[in-house]
Amino acid sequence: MFFVGCMYVVMVMESGVGKKRVVIIPKPLAEFLGLREGQKIRIMVIDNKTVIKPVRDTVWLALHGKKIGTISPEEVEEESMREQEKLS
Image 1 (cartoon, rainbow, N blue to C red):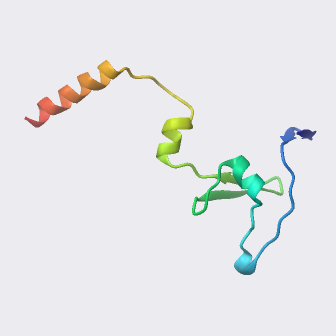
Image 2: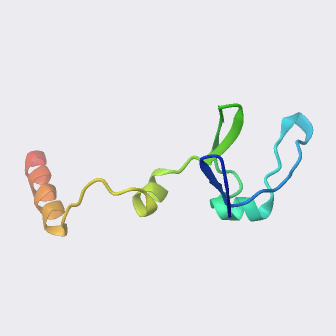
Image 3: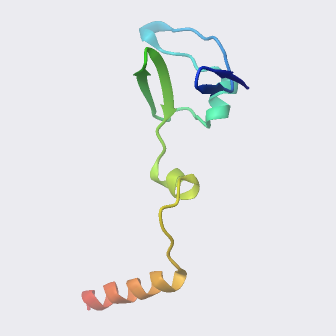
């Protein structure tokens, strides 16, 4: 890892652009980012630099994403009971 400007660079690799402008992401970089075949990515241009970020699905976010609140199993059960009462 080394410092460039105001960013830490963890990995630098060169790759190519294939037919139909397909960008080839080297395996070590894809593994580092947790990318898998078929996954969506977001490509942005920021300050004339190309930035590629994985688009995480809801299951990944639930397991690994930033937690913004907590709820106890008891609170889940209470809410479930209230909702079931509304249905009956």
